[in-house]
Length: 504
Length: 130
Image (cartoon, rainbow over all chains, first blue to last red; front, side):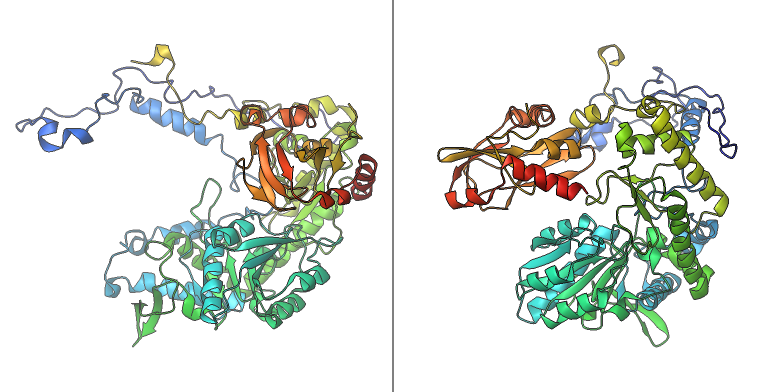
């Protein structure tokens, strides 16, 4: 496709064969090993294992391949990847920042990598110290009194937090029934409250995209246990009334849970604990640069006020006579919420990141993340609609409103970005913005990469006006073109199935 | 067919209601199906379930998002459109016909008065679009 901008340097992909499924490459009898002759007496397997536990299908339909076939298959597939190691990944709300390689180096140090979670305390002092230190660092960053590292991801952290709120209120003799959630909160928030047994009530945003204080005032009564607030919210705006909101909730006996998924806009600049928040989680896999594209694992530490600290999951690492020990003597604790001590390898990478940057470095990252989002907003705001004007934080939300008149939707724009060499931004979220495109560049991007992205978005707008049909069929340069998402969702085929001719 | 037929009543949550004696049929509007895009799954309540006005009676899932659908008026569920299990696309193709979702036994006829007419709903849509 032609474009007027010479900065966009597009190349043809280098040639490698398209890859079939490994099952389809199978050749009967192919192996990747050769075993020596048995030099001990043989025993029938069903003399050793109860036959009801044995497969009887002779591993039918498992792929059979030689070693080079397997290596080539997976190596070729690996070249199809797109990640923060290959380019900008502006997937809003996901904070796809670059993951520094020093994190990986530290996580592979033998003492950490080979430690077993059942080691006696005296043999695991280093690991326990990392947990202790991580909790201290995160308490400092959030402005809270204490932290648990057990939750395996953000939503798990939410559940842990709401369980603690329930435990505290039950202890006060006032368990309450409802949780209030603004419509600009993360979708996991209402799910969390419902799983924890609360009735969920939504609070509509005001015309500026912020929680409506008057509406909250009207809805907050003595049946409400907590407010779950995402801050900055999913429209990318800082809830500037956060102190008033917390005060109102506390005056009427409720608590404030803050979803800290968007901490990349606040880290080392502002502390939720200082604003009056009672409980919050952070996503280490977002803010603290641990890998999460492709499923993580994540880590969703939860930070709480002094009042809630006794309810934190058990065990906690404490320091006793100069040694780190696991404290199980926590009678008010909600109990263990994950096996062992959370995703330790992720926590370790996050500690490495925090110590590498220090508080000044973390602050600089936050400022750069906000600056970058504003840079993109500034250069695209004349072309793409920004539905909620306000102080843009770490991500900017556009909508397809102006492109819709050419019949182009956010999906077409996102697919076309792939042709320009970018991962698409988050689409159709938050739900309160129709046709949204949520762009979060993070601090990892320099001006050059962002300029390329801006040029690509400008070109796409031009294409929308001049050649909308082409956009509707994008992407054009990928191995496969546009998928039929509707058919895939209505009739998903989730695993390979042998056709008649492939069956043995 | 007009986008918003005159013989139906409408809610701010984009459901339509057709009152028929003591029963009412409910679905989602043309606007709602267009905003959602291609619908891939519809979750409906059990027959006999009693729900109050504004309670969620199910959800619609499109390739973009899952949205709850709300009771326009209080009542007990009389029928659900089983055909949507296999053919959720009816909601896109024929929102006021084959795309109907539930019929309910009207509990409180006075709630009907607060619903919008087609003209009122169209005004509501144009106000909120700008």
